[in-house]
Amino acid sequence: MTKWWRAVVAVTLVIAGAVIATILGWWLWRLLQGREETVEARWVPPQRPAERNIPVPFPDDLGEAAQSPLASTEVAPAVARLAVQVDDLTRIDGIGPKYAEGLARLGVTTFAQLSQQDADDLAARLKAQGLRIIGDRIRQEDWIGQAARLAGGQRQSA
Image 1 (cartoon, rainbow, N blue to C red):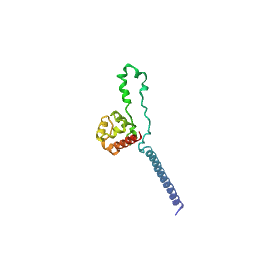
Image 2: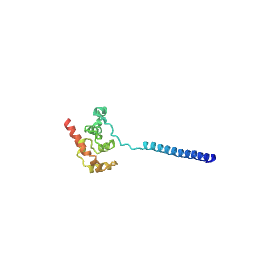
Image 3: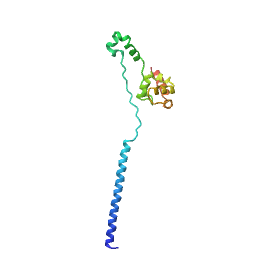
Image 4: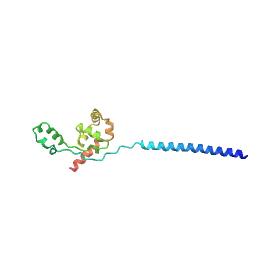
């Protein structure tokens, strides 16, 4: 082989190497870019909220309003509602703050009350409030059974 031919082969190999290195670098850069996007977009299951104490005002907190002549008409129903026992329904797997609020609007505020409900009827009443729920989900997550167990546990400790 002549020197000229060797030079052509060497230059061709250098150019081919540069092209291959460029393609591999571009591919690696795209791969890393895609990995960053998927990490940000990864679905994380919702976490159960930490148990919290919900402050309930007592009649003493109503101040002078409870002593006024209007107490018998306006404040008395509020005081009567405060006398109702309230359980933290979010302790039940599947019930978050929104469902607990919807149940409270239905008048279901204790585990004992929830344990007496029918899943399909409860789902229909929650749907009427604009919440997305079906009776099968209530049965699958066993809201009624969990409520019965929690209500039973409260009775034993009381």
